[in-house]
Length: 102
Image 1: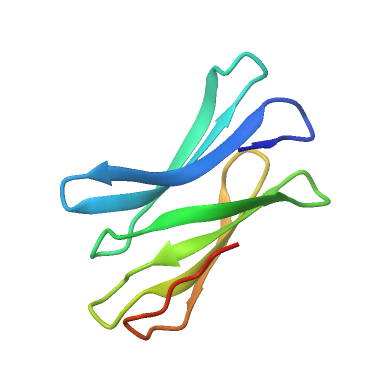
Image 2: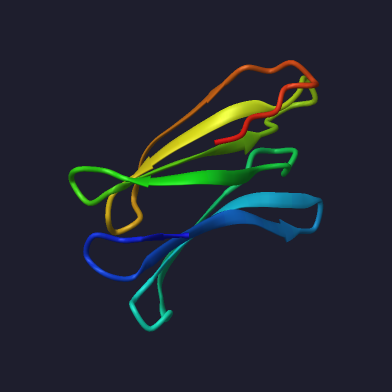
């Protein structure tokens, strides 16, 4: 969880639905009321976010792990606007034993 420049907080992690965790991003106001949420899931649904950063334009950068195929985990990075719109998503890596931390 990190404080947002315009007030409120940004939270990230994983949300388990059916087959496994999906990457989950939530923005709240100062009182903790939900402003928006984003869910990002690759086909194998073993995705989660580990780190958050604010950007100079009040947007956000999130990073974590994704498993888009049986080939292994990949480093995942996502860029969002302050209103939660996705600007881009990228993944790198892929060995079965690969894991990434902040």
